[in-house]
Image (spheres, rainbow, N blue to C red):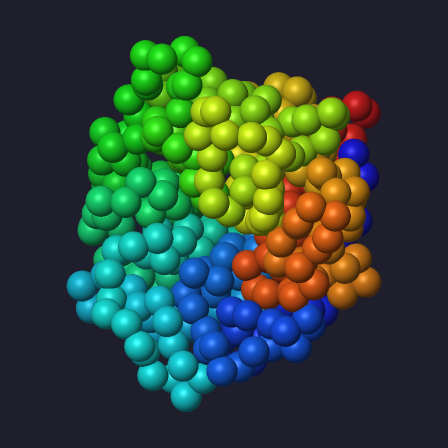
Length: 342
């Protein structure tokens, strides 16, 4: 596996000193659609964990961190949607953006080398960690963020409490061996669920939960490999009996799978997970159902969707961050394998 350092040119183009525009028309930001915390939090994850950040990437991290903290209410909930003029257009909640905000804050805290900045980040993360969401993916993202907090503050009771409650919600295996997935239908960002089980099992020293995460991740990966390449679940979801391959395929599915494979590799040391991660990386470079490139390697943009024989040429924030995140994880795995080979 060979993955060069990611390029952040297009991400910077989508960003201002106030946030990250959600949508683009080709490469041009659609300012009228405003910002959303969903994407800013993803951006915070990607820029904060970059191992050798440029000044530009450091600036983006500070912008995304400020946006994330400004989105939070006193009780720990988060707003999601913000106009360019700075006004929020929604009520604060514990929907998916809440979980992604915790993921971003935890990642930024773990990456920060400034004790004061880390303390400020952890204060925001702690307020959020004391809440709960009824939504599985929100709790899954929050669990991944809680695991990052535990890297900084081992034994943190709020992070451990979140992991315990996420285990109760997510950690019950199904008895149907032909459909081990915890939901009747695969929907979106599916691999975040097994990744959450991996960090829950690791954080709570629960080998059964961790193994459950590995089992359903292996099932999910196997389901989405066709003729030697990745063929991901479409935006409309999928259940047994529906035809595959199907479209429109979204980069977020690939990035979620890459994150989960990287996590499995890190926790188990089993290099077989690197092969799954390589499939994710290759998907962006044309090893997919349409044989078309899904990223602009010169600027780092990601295209918004893969269709039968075509590509959605818009390069929005979610897709761009999915491409960057997958490249980061592929590069990290490549470095790990190279060290192991020495």
